[in-house]
Length: 287
Image (cartoon, rainbow, N blue to C red; front, side):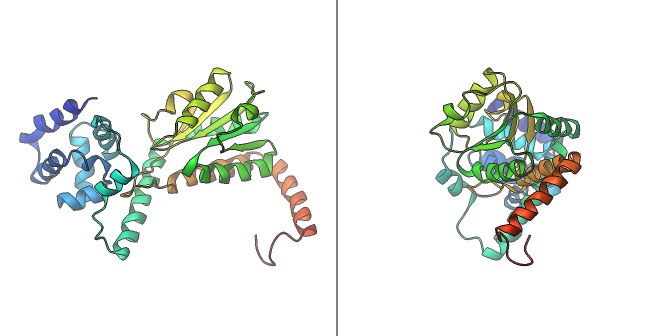
């Protein structure tokens, strides 16, 4: 959908919009460069309407919800903004700290709700099965996404002993030299996407590996290179991404996998507990 399509919808609907919806429409039209980066709660605040009104506005225009409308507004922009530009457009610099924590936690709750609606339970179950059956699991995660990749790799390798995190650009070819169709590669990437992540996922898919992509929306450049997908909302009113939803999905993957392989995992953890005790790994009373 092009920019004219988005704003043509708004224009055509003007006469039928409620007074509150017209305020939102006016704000979007008058702030074409900044509005697409605002969360539903911040847009509602700036347009002086309720957040529920913003969500209804999106559906009135024919979109699935605010996230869908926002995605198309962002795609309408011909210029790709830097982190500094996004910061300038989403923050006035006058926000009080106590307001910020409430706003961000609220936005994270919205991201979790949106992600709950986007993740297909059947595809999630199939992903868990593929991880269990994989010969090797490789996790490709660069820059900030490496935080999620590290978390996922730590626990998958703890129980499966076959997982490797690839977070450094150098040496990628050596890591993936012998990759086969029996291996699973999980690619993690969120706006702004790194070229290396896209390149690696494209390469491993061409090699026939089973690919899983965790990203933020269907228009992500990583999406075409995943056989299966986990779409997680990451929008907050900041130049950073919110990783509340991706981390929750990662936790769900680990938990579902360990439950599916309960007996095997239980034996593994019992062996590890003995080893941890021998080497005095944990502080008394710690997990």
